[in-house]
Each structure stands twice: as structure tokens, then as C-alpha cells.
Length: 351
Image (cartoon, rainbow, N blue to C red; front, side, top):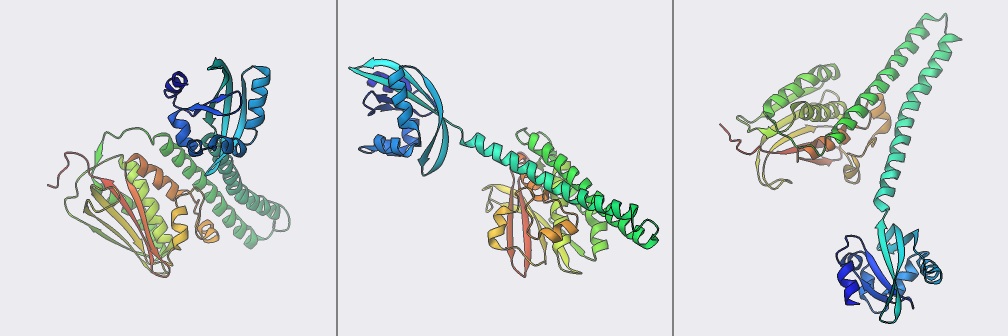
């Protein structure tokens, strides 16, 4: 079986050669990595028992002497979905040999599931304000048609719901754009202090209206980072708006920026821009979920504030393109700190 082993070792997907008596003849390195039980004595028999439908498929292939393709499920640590192709390649050393090629369909299945969930979430997010607006219109067309006070109140509520849908569509477009550009290389460099000042200017009116104080501490002579200024400004605006929304009444939002020399998630010299608030904080188990699309810590409060649940997802994807990292630290009752780490551009020095 050395010839078969030599041939299948050059294949990049799991390949298993099986004798006519359903014993293992050979397997390539990828198969042993994917299905480690094949290495054990009697491992192939256990593999057949654990892989739903495979035993019957092998029997049919031996009987009909023809190739077949089907979907099977294997439990190698966790359930995986494969498309297996079974092909008879003739007799070797007095035994018929079947060649099994496995294509992992789990990733595609997960992507399809994510897409379905995403569409369901978007539909839900849009349906809610549309239902509210529809109810307001019916009321205005009926009982409240002559009631000036009620008309003004309902028109105000309708305007709020329209703004909520507008924010959702805007964030969906932004998320789509940053995801589409995620793998494109960055060629330009930007000054972090310019990015910060632009973001602060954009949220100042919101902070004043909310009665919150913005405190800014930027180190002098910050080196340049590689990136797109508009995208990085969007990152800071999203973080600052969240901090303003969730800080305490008449609270403070702080933004600091400094050079971090190697002791950071990037493991190299980086710019650290930290946005902190004095809000209620976030439970430790919720922190890993924050960058998921439509995830909200406080769903009702977020919707009332016009939040779409997409802001931190946008932040995550922008930072992926910029080779940066987002680190979230929070203590219940003490507030949160969102720190963005961006690698310093090559040949960029502090002047």
C-alpha cells in the first residue's frame, strides 16, 4: 500500500483508503490530523461507528462497483459535516480498494447559519419601528385626527422611529463597506492626533446635550499609524458615543492617547487610544460578546438611545484591516475602558 500512501499524502483534504473487508489500508496526514482515532488499534472500526451513514455507503460502493458521493456527519471532538466521495480504484495486493475523500462543509454551513441569523436580526430591527410607525399613523388617521396635542406627540414619536431606522441603514452600509475592504492593504499614513480631534469635534454637541464632560489627554508628538483617517475617526466616534450614552448623569468621559512600547496585545510598539466612562460597567461574561452584530448589554436602553447594536461590530472590522486590537476592561459599578491599539507605521518616528 506504499504507492497509495505516497499518492494520497499529496492531497490537501482528508483521504482514506479502505480494503474490501472494511479495514484501513492507508490514510494521508490530513486524515490522521482530522480523525486522530485512525492511529489507534481498531480505530477505523470506531471511526465507522461514529460517522453516521458511512458504513452503509461503503457497502453500497463495494456492491455496485461505482463511485458515490454523500453527506456524512463525523464526531471528532465535536460534530462536523462532510461531503464524502467514495471511488473504487481497483485491486491492490489481492483486495479491492475504495478511496474516501472528505470535504468539510461545516464552515459553509456556519456561514449560511450566520447569514440567516443576520437577515433575521435585520428584519426584526426594521419591523419594530415600522410596526410602531404604522400604529401611530392609524391613530392619527382615526381617534387623534383632531387632537392637536396627541398629533404633536405621535409625530415626535414617529420622527424618533424614522431616525432609528435611518441609523440602522447607515450602520448596515458602514458595516458592509468595512467588511468588503477588510482584506485590502493600507498604503496611507495618518496622524493619530488629527483623528482624535476630528472625533472629539463630532461628539461634542452630543456630550453637551447629555450634560457629560469630555476630558482629553493626548501625548505630544504621537507617531503616525498606517490607515484610513475616516475609518479610524468612525472607530473613535462609536466608542465616544457609547461612553457618553452609558456614563452616569453629569458624568465624565475620558480619552487618552499615548505610545505603548511592546507591552500590549500587538506585541510591538503601538499607539493606545483609550476611551473610558464612569457608567454602570459590563459583566465579565458579556465582554466577549460586545462586538457581535446586534448584541446589546441593555437592549431597551440602547434602542431608546437610538443604538443599532452594530457600532462595536464596525469597530472590530475596521481594526482587523488596520491590524489593530480592541481591549475592553470593565468593573460593575465602576465604568468601562475601551482601548484601541494601532501599530506604529514603519519609518515613523517621534519628532
